[in-house]
Amino acid sequence: MTRTPHTAPTRATRHGPPATPRPPWRSAGEWWLAAVAAAFTLLQLALVRPGMGLGWDETVYVSQVSSHAPAAFFSAPRARGITLLVAPVASWSSSTALLRVYLAVLSGLGLYWALRAWRGLFPVRVIAAGGALFASLWITLFYGPQAMPNYWVAVGASATVGFFLHTWSDRTRSGALWGVAAGAALMAWIRPTDAVWVALPLLALVLFVHPRRRLRLLLALVTGLAAGATEWIVEAYVDYGGVGARLAAGSRIQGGLGLHNAVVDQLRSLGGRALCRPCTGAIASPPVIAWWFVLPLLAAAALVIAVRARRTTRTLLPLACAVTAAVPYLFLIGYAAPRFLLPAYALLAIPVADALARLVDAPGGRRRTLAVTVVAVGLAGHLAVQFDVLERAVSRTAAEHRVWSRTAADLRRLGVHPPCLVTEGDSVPVAFAAGCASAHTGGHDANITGAELARTAHRMPVVLLTTHLIHPPSYARTWQPHRLTGGYAYLAPGAVGKEGGQG
Image (tube, rainbow, N blue to C red):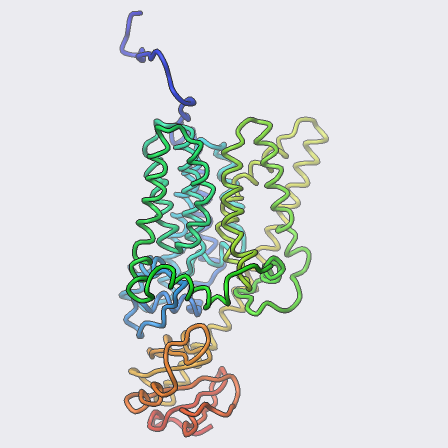
């Protein structure tokens, strides 16, 4: 055969499935992915107030690198990925608004990266729709601009699975291996235990990969997980006596990991509760929780569609990873927070969007019209509910944070200035706002004794926070009570400045 400059050389044989086509940027409609990510960022800035103060857990992460106040106690279950993520801003600025804007932009970029990992596996319109479904959840919008780990585990999980599927189906795309490693490293960097749960189906699928690719895929996945978890592992040996000891300490702090049924607790949290511990009270109204029951039905429909279309793996794998990501938070922990399931929602989003796309593309005039109407009305109602819950969650959280800020201002008026120490109650966020250190003598974050507090009171102002007047513990029996915005403060003798007065 005569070869011309436009004739590609042929091969006698070709191993493996055909390469996934990679269309040009514009023909792929990639701008839809960028539009979804940009809209996600703008919605965060518009609906989740940048001026909303830091929450309790956020304060712990941010205080590790902030010069505004001493670092709060860092407990065993936490990892320092979020601390390093916020360091570019928090290390030199105490502005919460600036930190929120930074995280909103960064979370939009993270979503865009995760969606790009799925190009070629599903139509771009399906990927964009899946990204929009995930990004429009009140939980995603609420936690995107916060210094919290679960959104970033979700981004890493989605990207890892997408890149893994590319590598599994196309041995020519070596760049996807780097994506697998990067996504796994991000998950483990942020929350190592969550990363392991997400990775379990991937590790199982590796066994069915062609031997020539098995080692590379396994190496990329394990190397990414190990690289991301290195700091956590080193800290485990330095501060806890090993990985096993740190996991055991984390289990104690979380109330003892074991068989629990937290499904109903998760339903209670869907109404906008940031943390459900202990989880009591009524379950949110049916319109608020309806999507939670529709989600598995759509996931099952997506799997049926994929099996019939003979593309089972690209749908089954994210669904399997979503299940393993959700298991510890539904059945192994005795409390709930809606953010715990963000990785599962991110992994379900694209298969669910694929099922919805097939519904609206159903053949037949009346049948298709009915399907489009049902899906449109359902999505409109779903979005209305999500934004309503988000508005209430933001308002409630902002009010709570304002109380902490006013309590810190009350302490300053009482003459409490750095160096100082605040203990018990809401000591972590209040102390950070006041520029003080924080400590607890009991509970999950116990890191000081009463005797140590009494000795510290000889060197600096020490404050005991309570919500009501109490019989103070032995170390604080001579301390003076003062009425604050959020309750009462017992101040050690000598801690009250000229403006202070006994309450």
